[in-house]
Length: 219
Image (cartoon, rainbow, N blue to C red):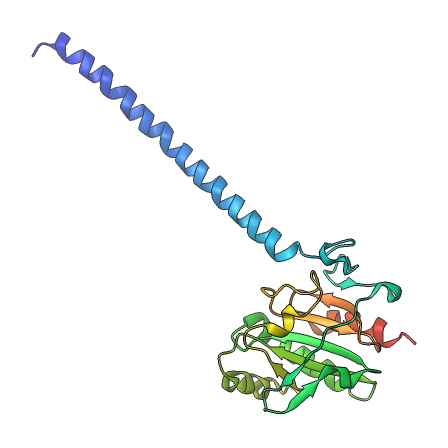
């Protein structure tokens, strides 16, 4: 075959190589855009339900720069019935604590952020034990009480926890109050049993006290 006859073949191969070289970055860009869109959708799902003023469910939360949401006294919504069996097998009804400020903490023994915040909750619960404040846990997604009880023992948790492995208690709250996928979560109920403050992330001691103290100070 002559050089002249081979030249067109070389010419045909060159565009193919160029197409592959230019299409690969395009594929990568499309994949990156798709991944970014998926991440954005997940963020909206996790953070978009009632977290700001006028949010979904008319729960009237206003979120501060520290991520703690609060509700003005006249706009609060009553917590639902929260009764059932504790991890120790005893009956507990949160309504029995009416007249006290109640801190509800949703947690699971499988949850690393829950483990990180547990010592802070144990400390603050002890400090407020004689100030008409009652802490109550809601344990979720633990298949049995065994790991949950070990968690309480490891971190010296001094208060009871309702056993809610399937999240039924969380679903009783007004729409926009809690995200069942956000564990840990914390709610503060005022003395009338209404939701006064909320966090959908783990809390350290300082932020927990900051969330709790204004409600304790109410008369």
